[in-house]
Length: 248
Ligand code: ADP
Ligand code: MG
Image (cartoon, rainbow, N blue to C red; front, side):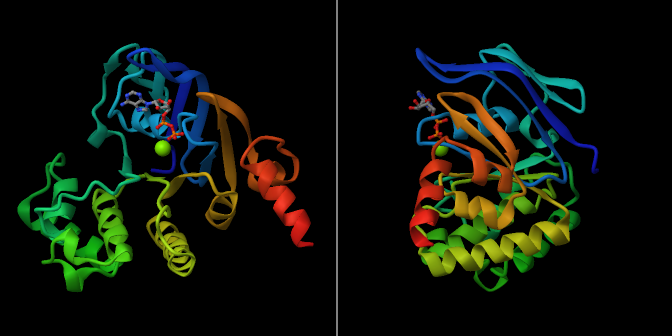
Protein backbone atom coordinates (compact mmCIF):
# COMPACT_ATOMS: atom_id res chain seq x y z
CA UNK A 1 0.00 0.00 0.00
CA UNK A 2 2.72 2.46 -0.94
CA UNK A 3 0.23 4.63 -2.83
CA UNK A 4 -1.26 6.40 0.13
CA UNK A 5 -1.43 10.19 0.10
CA UNK A 6 -3.37 12.50 2.36
CA UNK A 7 -4.08 15.90 0.93
CA UNK A 8 -5.39 18.92 2.83
CA UNK A 9 -6.92 21.61 0.65
CA UNK A 10 -7.60 25.00 2.29
CA UNK A 11 -8.56 23.40 5.59
CA UNK A 12 -9.74 25.61 8.45
CA UNK A 13 -10.74 24.37 11.89
CA UNK A 14 -12.48 26.34 14.61
CA UNK A 15 -13.12 25.11 18.15
CA UNK A 16 -15.95 27.44 19.06
CA UNK A 17 -14.42 30.82 18.38
CA UNK A 18 -10.82 29.63 18.54
CA UNK A 19 -9.25 29.17 15.13
CA UNK A 20 -6.82 26.26 15.51
CA UNK A 21 -6.02 25.63 11.83
CA UNK A 22 -6.28 28.24 9.09
CA UNK A 23 -6.38 27.77 5.32
CA UNK A 24 -3.94 24.88 5.50
CA UNK A 25 -2.91 23.00 2.35
CA UNK A 26 -0.52 20.09 2.59
CA UNK A 27 0.25 16.65 1.15
CA UNK A 28 1.56 13.74 3.20
CA UNK A 29 2.97 10.80 1.23
CA UNK A 30 3.47 7.20 2.36
CA UNK A 31 7.16 6.40 2.41
CA UNK A 32 8.22 9.91 3.41
CA UNK A 33 8.69 10.22 7.18
CA UNK A 34 7.52 13.73 7.98
CA UNK A 35 8.02 15.88 11.04
CA UNK A 36 5.48 18.53 11.98
CA UNK A 37 7.31 21.28 13.82
CA UNK A 38 6.15 24.51 15.38
CA UNK A 39 5.54 26.32 18.65
CA UNK A 40 2.93 25.28 21.19
CA UNK A 41 -0.60 26.22 20.12
CA UNK A 42 0.18 26.47 16.39
CA UNK A 43 -2.27 23.68 15.50
CA UNK A 44 -0.07 20.55 15.27
CA UNK A 45 -2.35 18.26 17.31
CA UNK A 46 -5.39 19.59 15.48
CA UNK A 47 -3.76 18.69 12.16
CA UNK A 48 -3.39 15.08 13.36
CA UNK A 49 -6.97 14.95 14.65
CA UNK A 50 -8.22 16.18 11.28
CA UNK A 51 -6.08 13.63 9.44
CA UNK A 52 -7.35 10.70 11.50
CA UNK A 53 -10.95 11.87 11.24
CA UNK A 54 -11.40 12.43 14.97
CA UNK A 55 -12.51 15.96 14.08
CA UNK A 56 -14.22 17.34 10.97
CA UNK A 57 -12.78 20.48 9.37
CA UNK A 58 -14.90 23.64 9.64
CA UNK A 59 -14.19 24.30 5.98
CA UNK A 60 -11.99 22.89 3.27
CA UNK A 61 -11.40 19.32 2.10
CA UNK A 62 -9.22 16.38 3.12
CA UNK A 63 -8.58 13.72 0.49
CA UNK A 64 -7.06 10.25 0.61
CA UNK A 65 -5.69 9.11 -2.75
CA UNK A 66 -7.88 11.70 -4.45
CA UNK A 67 -11.08 10.68 -2.67
CA UNK A 68 -12.74 13.15 -0.30
CA UNK A 69 -12.67 11.78 3.25
CA UNK A 70 -13.59 14.94 5.22
CA UNK A 71 -15.12 18.23 4.20
CA UNK A 72 -16.79 21.28 5.76
CA UNK A 73 -18.26 19.87 8.97
CA UNK A 74 -18.34 16.21 7.91
CA UNK A 75 -16.16 13.16 8.47
CA UNK A 76 -17.03 10.97 5.48
CA UNK A 77 -14.60 8.11 6.13
CA UNK A 78 -14.19 7.08 9.78
CA UNK A 79 -10.82 6.87 11.56
CA UNK A 80 -10.35 3.08 11.31
CA UNK A 81 -10.69 3.16 7.50
CA UNK A 82 -7.97 5.74 6.89
CA UNK A 83 -4.82 3.68 7.38
CA UNK A 84 -3.56 6.08 10.04
CA UNK A 85 -3.09 5.29 13.73
CA UNK A 86 -2.18 7.81 16.38
CA UNK A 87 -0.25 7.77 19.63
CA UNK A 88 -1.67 10.63 21.66
CA UNK A 89 0.44 13.13 23.53
CA UNK A 90 -1.01 11.94 26.86
CA UNK A 91 -1.01 8.32 25.54
CA UNK A 92 -4.73 7.95 26.38
CA UNK A 93 -4.33 4.47 27.88
CA UNK A 94 -7.38 3.28 29.81
CA UNK A 95 -6.23 2.98 33.42
CA UNK A 96 -8.74 0.24 34.30
CA UNK A 97 -7.77 -2.01 31.37
CA UNK A 98 -4.67 -4.19 31.11
CA UNK A 99 -2.01 -3.53 28.49
CA UNK A 100 -3.40 -6.38 26.40
CA UNK A 101 -6.95 -5.01 26.66
CA UNK A 102 -5.76 -1.54 25.72
CA UNK A 103 -4.05 -2.93 22.63
CA UNK A 104 -7.18 -4.95 21.79
CA UNK A 105 -9.20 -1.75 21.90
CA UNK A 106 -7.20 -0.44 18.95
CA UNK A 107 -8.66 -3.28 16.88
CA UNK A 108 -12.27 -2.83 17.95
CA UNK A 109 -13.17 -1.01 14.72
CA UNK A 110 -11.76 -3.76 12.50
CA UNK A 111 -13.65 -6.89 11.53
CA UNK A 112 -11.00 -9.43 12.44
CA UNK A 113 -11.89 -12.87 13.77
CA UNK A 114 -11.12 -13.47 17.43
CA UNK A 115 -8.16 -15.61 16.44
CA UNK A 116 -6.71 -13.02 14.06
CA UNK A 117 -7.18 -10.29 16.68
CA UNK A 118 -5.35 -12.34 19.28
CA UNK A 119 -2.50 -12.94 16.84
CA UNK A 120 -2.26 -9.24 16.00
CA UNK A 121 -2.28 -8.24 19.66
CA UNK A 122 0.49 -10.69 20.56
CA UNK A 123 2.53 -9.61 17.57
CA UNK A 124 2.25 -5.92 18.55
CA UNK A 125 3.15 -6.70 22.17
CA UNK A 126 6.19 -8.68 21.04
CA UNK A 127 7.32 -6.01 18.58
CA UNK A 128 7.11 -3.36 21.27
CA UNK A 129 8.72 -5.72 23.78
CA UNK A 130 5.99 -5.54 26.41
CA UNK A 131 4.60 -9.08 26.15
CA UNK A 132 5.87 -9.80 29.65
CA UNK A 133 3.70 -7.03 31.13
CA UNK A 134 0.60 -7.72 29.02
CA UNK A 135 -1.57 -8.49 32.06
CA UNK A 136 -0.62 -5.36 34.00
CA UNK A 137 -2.57 -2.13 34.28
CA UNK A 138 -0.97 1.03 32.84
CA UNK A 139 -0.40 2.33 36.37
CA UNK A 140 1.88 -0.64 37.04
CA UNK A 141 4.22 0.21 34.15
CA UNK A 142 7.28 2.43 33.83
CA UNK A 143 7.00 5.54 31.64
CA UNK A 144 8.83 3.80 28.80
CA UNK A 145 6.55 0.77 29.02
CA UNK A 146 3.46 3.00 28.92
CA UNK A 147 4.88 4.64 25.83
CA UNK A 148 5.38 1.19 24.25
CA UNK A 149 1.85 0.11 25.17
CA UNK A 150 0.39 3.11 23.34
CA UNK A 151 2.69 2.36 20.41
CA UNK A 152 1.59 -1.29 20.36
CA UNK A 153 -2.07 -0.25 20.29
CA UNK A 154 -1.40 1.92 17.23
CA UNK A 155 0.75 -0.67 15.42
CA UNK A 156 -1.75 -3.51 16.01
CA UNK A 157 -3.99 -2.03 13.32
CA UNK A 158 -1.07 -2.21 10.83
CA UNK A 159 -1.44 1.38 9.74
CA UNK A 160 0.18 2.91 6.69
CA UNK A 161 0.85 6.08 8.72
CA UNK A 162 1.87 6.16 12.36
CA UNK A 163 1.13 9.53 13.95
CA UNK A 164 3.15 10.37 17.05
CA UNK A 165 2.08 13.50 18.94
CA UNK A 166 5.04 14.79 20.99
CA UNK A 167 5.92 11.25 22.06
CA UNK A 168 8.94 12.20 24.11
CA UNK A 169 7.63 14.89 26.40
CA UNK A 170 8.27 13.90 30.00
CA UNK A 171 10.80 11.22 29.03
CA UNK A 172 14.46 11.43 29.97
CA UNK A 173 17.12 11.81 27.29
CA UNK A 174 18.60 8.31 27.53
CA UNK A 175 15.20 6.65 27.20
CA UNK A 176 14.28 9.03 24.40
CA UNK A 177 17.33 8.03 22.37
CA UNK A 178 16.45 4.37 22.91
CA UNK A 179 12.82 4.85 21.87
CA UNK A 180 13.88 6.82 18.79
CA UNK A 181 16.11 3.91 17.79
CA UNK A 182 13.32 1.40 18.32
CA UNK A 183 10.85 3.50 16.35
CA UNK A 184 13.30 3.76 13.48
CA UNK A 185 13.76 -0.02 13.39
CA UNK A 186 10.04 -0.77 13.76
CA UNK A 187 8.88 1.63 11.07
CA UNK A 188 11.44 0.22 8.64
CA UNK A 189 10.50 -3.39 9.42
CA UNK A 190 6.75 -2.72 9.19
CA UNK A 191 7.01 -0.19 6.34
CA UNK A 192 5.05 2.34 8.35
CA UNK A 193 5.37 6.02 7.52
CA UNK A 194 5.90 8.31 10.49
CA UNK A 195 4.26 11.64 11.07
CA UNK A 196 6.12 12.97 14.08
CA UNK A 197 4.85 16.05 15.89
CA UNK A 198 7.56 17.69 17.90
CA UNK A 199 8.88 21.02 19.07
CA UNK A 200 12.42 19.61 19.04
CA UNK A 201 14.14 19.56 15.63
CA UNK A 202 16.73 17.07 16.88
CA UNK A 203 14.01 14.41 17.39
CA UNK A 204 12.77 15.11 13.89
CA UNK A 205 16.27 14.93 12.44
CA UNK A 206 16.78 11.51 14.02
CA UNK A 207 13.85 9.87 12.22
CA UNK A 208 12.37 12.13 9.52
CA UNK A 209 13.61 13.12 6.08
CA UNK A 210 10.99 15.81 5.50
CA UNK A 211 9.47 18.48 7.70
CA UNK A 212 6.52 20.82 7.75
CA UNK A 213 6.80 23.92 9.90
CA UNK A 214 3.51 25.28 11.21
CA UNK A 215 2.86 28.77 12.44
CA UNK A 216 -0.42 30.22 13.59
CA UNK A 217 -2.56 27.37 12.23
CA UNK A 218 -1.02 27.06 8.81
CA UNK A 219 2.01 25.68 6.96
CA UNK A 220 4.70 28.33 7.01
CA UNK A 221 7.55 26.29 5.53
CA UNK A 222 8.29 22.77 4.32
CA UNK A 223 11.14 20.85 2.76
CA UNK A 224 13.77 18.23 3.35
CA UNK A 225 15.02 18.12 6.91
CA UNK A 226 18.62 19.17 6.10
CA UNK A 227 17.39 21.99 3.89
CA UNK A 228 15.09 23.37 6.57
CA UNK A 229 17.74 23.07 9.26
CA UNK A 230 20.07 25.12 7.10
CA UNK A 231 17.66 27.77 5.92
CA UNK A 232 14.44 28.17 7.90
CA UNK A 233 14.15 31.33 9.95
CA UNK A 234 11.11 29.95 11.76
CA UNK A 235 10.92 28.57 15.28
CA UNK A 236 11.95 26.07 16.49
CA UNK A 237 14.53 25.76 13.70
CA UNK A 238 16.06 29.17 14.25
CA UNK A 239 16.84 28.44 17.90
CA UNK A 240 18.14 24.99 16.99
CA UNK A 241 20.57 26.49 14.50
CA UNK A 242 21.83 29.18 16.85
CA UNK A 243 22.43 26.59 19.59
CA UNK A 244 24.40 24.49 17.08
CA UNK A 245 26.49 27.54 16.14
CA UNK A 246 27.34 28.17 19.78
CA UNK A 247 28.35 24.52 20.13
CA UNK A 248 30.92 24.85 17.32
P1 ADP B 1 -0.41 22.39 19.25
O1 ADP B 1 -0.62 20.92 19.22
O2 ADP B 1 0.47 22.90 18.16
O3 ADP B 1 0.07 22.87 20.58
P2 ADP B 1 -3.32 22.52 19.10
O4 ADP B 1 -3.71 21.97 17.80
O5 ADP B 1 -3.47 21.66 20.30
O6 ADP B 1 -1.83 23.10 18.99
O7 ADP B 1 -4.15 23.84 19.38
C1 ADP B 1 -4.28 24.91 18.46
C2 ADP B 1 -5.16 25.98 19.09
O8 ADP B 1 -6.49 25.45 19.26
C3 ADP B 1 -4.73 26.44 20.47
O9 ADP B 1 -5.03 27.81 20.57
C4 ADP B 1 -5.57 25.62 21.39
O10 ADP B 1 -5.76 26.29 22.61
C5 ADP B 1 -6.86 25.49 20.62
N1 ADP B 1 -7.58 24.24 20.92
C6 ADP B 1 -7.12 22.99 20.71
N2 ADP B 1 -8.04 22.07 21.07
C7 ADP B 1 -9.12 22.76 21.50
C8 ADP B 1 -10.44 22.39 21.99
N3 ADP B 1 -10.80 21.12 22.08
N4 ADP B 1 -11.26 23.40 22.34
C9 ADP B 1 -10.90 24.69 22.22
N5 ADP B 1 -9.72 25.10 21.77
C10 ADP B 1 -8.83 24.16 21.41
MG1 MG C 1 -0.24 19.46 20.65
